[in-house]
Image (tube, rainbow, N blue to C red):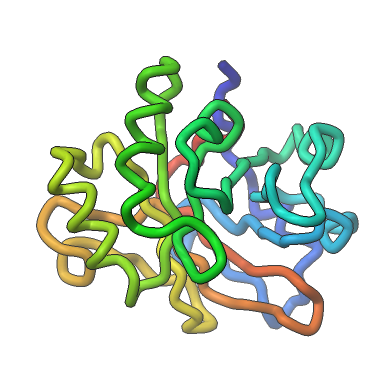
Length: 193
């Protein structure tokens, strides 16, 4: 198991000056990006999140290019067996549904892999939370990354997510013209396995 690197503000250098967020002023650990197509992030030297089962699929080499900064794999498919290669499951249209999240978390735990998680937009969160809580799974077992394109990083805690829940990261912007999303990590990232 690799240790999670804390990435410095210097890793944000690829972002235009107008888009930089001061880690000290904003809080948290910094920005990471995700993209369906790994080639879109070739010029980004910061941490990434990619998809091993999307078309085009991220290869091991695609992830390893970001080894120093950190990387995380996310499954777009609902089958729990993807938990052996992905840290989180993607809950949105044309991906996994809310009902897939508990099985994904349990499969990672069965494999001895910690820090299972889910990616979900704010409007889809109540359904995911209902599934997790019905299965007896809380925030200590399932890390949550919330998508809400506000254009600026913000924290999501019990006021927005319900008692006992806090998002570790926020996907705050979709840069559609360039094909990637921007995320802000509020807690120490748990990169790779």
